[in-house]
Length: 104
Image: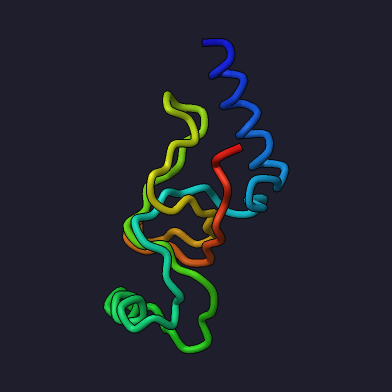
């Protein structure tokens, strides 16, 4: 038990410090898909949500949930672990995503 708590706290410290994928801005998420914001399926969803897609760059996470590194099973993500800076759509689509490594 102490080892798993230590591992979770170590992971949280690395993420907060900008290690493990440079998640020093934004929050960690586990997303079912990660695509370019220029992908037609992404631009369609963004347009439907009222987001102006012209000029957007980077990656978008689709169908995301928060990656809580301090809970039981800390750091577990079987899909795409990412750090996202814009999650205004409650996980439906997150913008400004960068991959992170949760397998320390």
